[in-house]
Image (cartoon, rainbow, N blue to C red; front, side, top):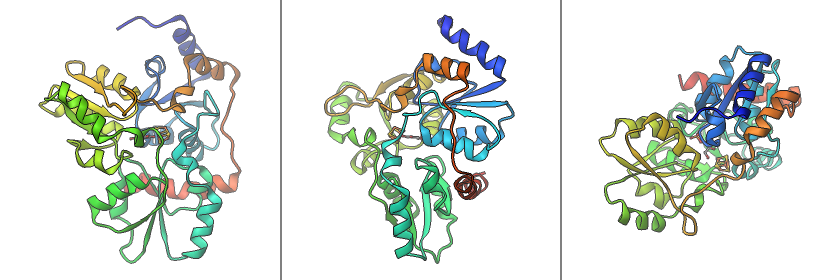
Length: 309
Ligand code: 13P
Ligand code: SF4
């Protein structure tokens, strides 16, 4: 356990001064994870944001995650170290396109993966994350046709698990679709005893051949409880820091793509420890959104938080 750097100490001092809480996603760089009050998946972070009693929330993740924190906390400043930290999956479903679809299919029940903009959330019936998607879809009234946005891979996986037919929006995560079964098999030749743990945003062949498919948070529990000692972790590499910290007696190997030994989300990596310090110093950049959108986006988030308890 290396001591904190001067800049990490500075972040902690500013955090205290501002009475802020730092929430960080599992994909953040280790330097940030180590100064966060909570590190977790989208679901855990949404709960922590909802119950936050600090004066200010600093969200170290991507834009839609910080936006979700603002939707449930309209009166608190929500800071995002880099405003350009977007998400390719979120971008694959523009609100205007979803509005058009809904107009043409008025009966549809829209289940949205949390990786979407506030404007899209405002058009949906319920939100889900990779950690609760099955539970949420099972609660949708049987007589309504479901449209699942924006991740076709997660949607396909949930549909297979629940047996519920769903129309799938043709979106995907640019980083997760780069993992291939071929590249994983090649790595398995080197680590024949390793179990493969994959995120549901991966393509079907990768999911079908994995030993476990789950959200980033559930990966921690799975690897801790499993008898196996080695794991190939098929998701963004930041996850390895969290696993090594919490399950120190086991070995974690980053899932490879065809061209790279590991895979990073360029958006998640836009946040740096310097930008985290600066946003706390300047109380900027902050998430803002029109109040009518915020109010409409709140209901499906609230429904998710209640349904997934
Ligand atoms: P989790 O909710 O499983 O952490 O996933 C978030 C995400 O963006 C995956 O790419
Ligand atoms: Fe979006 Fe993919 Fe990055 Fe997750 S890993 S934030 S889904 S681009």
